[in-house]
Image (tube, rainbow, N blue to C red):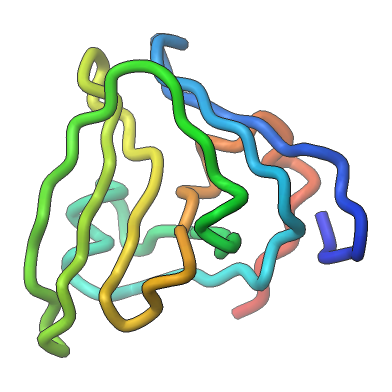
Length: 116
């Protein structure tokens, strides 16, 4: 999944299938975040995420949000499936035009290449 001018729509969702989303813009970049908040979100040592323009993200189904203040002082909002608790997306006041999709929630995450 590499950025291009006219991407095929991407899709993803949660473990139980009740929360789904579509992405109509190309990915901006991908990261692995090792901060303590992302460790809590992912349940692991890091959280692989893909950044998309916020306007290209559309979610359907039950999404519960949790807000927090990052160690750097930014407002962060994390969206989880209300039913099964799968982490779906994250936004931050540092980059208001970006939505971070948790990489494991993408339907085609096997095609995803994330650098160090």
